Amino acid sequence: MPLLNTTIMRLNEITTRIKNKNHLSADDESFIKQIFREINEDGETYDVDEIESWFENEGSWKNKLVRNRITNISHYQQTRYEQNNKFRMVSDNDSCSCGE
Image (cartoon, rainbow, N blue to C red; front, side, top):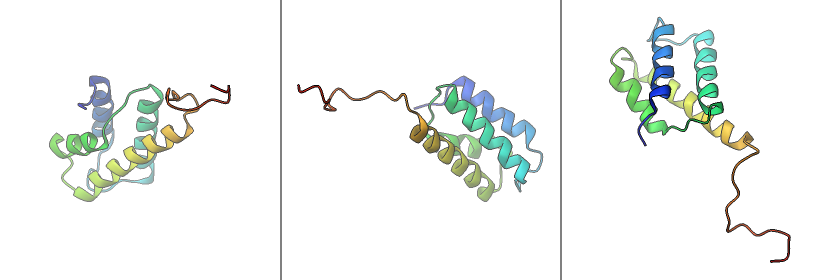
């Protein structure tokens, strides 16, 4: 699934804000976590592989370890959001206790 334009805009925020692209500070990581948290809370979905590919192709993120860290943060935030989302749709195949 290709990334939404709004998601790409948020990834550009990360690129603009992070000055040292060879090392992430604790503040940088907090900012990145917040961005991905907001993307998820806004209901946008993304494929983690697409996030990784975007940072790889963006051009200014040369350090693979930093790109991997950002990808890991995106995956963690997505998984955490999915686990905490109490309003997920229940499949029609799920049985109910209504006796049917």
